[in-house]
Amino acid sequence: MKKIFYLFFFSFFFSSFIYAQTDNINLEDLWLKGKYKTQSLGNIIHLNDGEHFVMRDSLKNIVEYEYSTGNPTKILLSMEDFVSVSGLSSASIEDISFSPDEKYLLLGTESTIIYRYSVSYKFLIWNINNKTVKPLSDKGSQRLATFSPQGDKIAFVRGNNIFVKDFGS
Image (cartoon, one colour):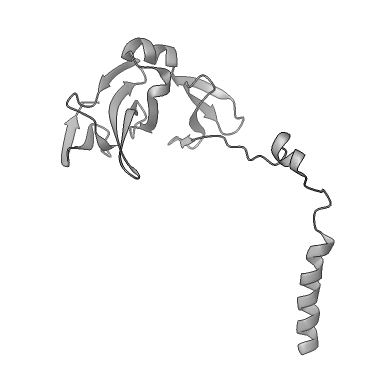
């Protein structure tokens, strides 16, 4: 039994040397050429239909893509429209979330770090169909803004108080 165990152990141990990389890693490939650099798609938001996802493109537009092809299907928020309607810059959008019916976007702008991982935003509500924007609240920045399951209300925290805003979607 011990012979079988040792045979089994050594076969796994030495097999790693047989199938090891043959490509030598050097500093030029690592730092100058970026051959081993990781790549990321960025933040992806999965839509309820299971066939589409949303992410920002190179122009910071919020775009819907198909899973099957990876091709864009429509622009949900054009930065041109957002800048002209809101008066803010395209770089000011830092957080994005959808309403349950995916007709509205909750956009976190102008973040303020409170402590370590706690952040407050000035949230804006973007109507995807009408291309209009309105602030969640005018009385200061908010935290933890969340749509209700029905999508007609948004709960948020401001100044350690909980508020619920009915925006009548």
